[in-house]
Amino acid sequence: MRLVPAGAPPPLLVACALRIERAALRSGSGTGAPERYEILRTGMGPRAADRAVGRALGEPGLGGAAVLATGFCAGLLPGMSPGDLIVAEETRDPRGTVACAGTALLAEALARALPGRTVHLGALTGSDHVVRGQERAQLRATGAIGVDMESAATLWTAARGGTVADGADRPVAAVRVIVDAPEHELVRIGTVRGGISAFRVLRAVLPAFYDWHRSLLLPRR
Image (cartoon, rainbow, N blue to C red):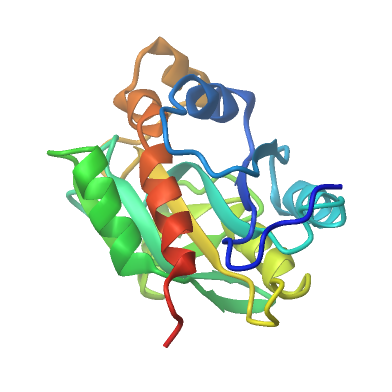
């Protein structure tokens, strides 16, 4: 195994659930990727995310990785549209809350990478099923602005899976692209394949993720 040089950022693990999400990320990788990174497809749902991320962080060279959860989600706020982005300030599930690192920098990097797209910052909550109708309003009442099935589980597992090489807390973040919103309810995920703008947005996010990852080299305050 090649050792990571002193002073280098940790490896980067980008986790998504669906084949179509991984396909979007791989087709839009661009330039500036870190020397060691991996796009992991976890499978759908919090249990699958727990298992897949736990296994990945046990692999040689990835134990100290920074972890970023991404993919599609449902927006909870009126006025949100497909193709908008959510940068999580924290993720929540029944086990608790995980704070995200570098959210302001990540939001700025996404705004540069995707000019004209709206970037929302706030809490991203987890669910073990697709959220519909009244349940959306109930989750909004908790203060969450978006919901998906894997981000909270991914970050919970990552945050409790050890530290990076210098003993600091593992950097974690979550960025989701809205495919489903109060005024734009999605009937089925297959609709994404029909050309919904969220796929094109997800193709363009990796340069912003690389910027976030490079920021881990900066002195921590």
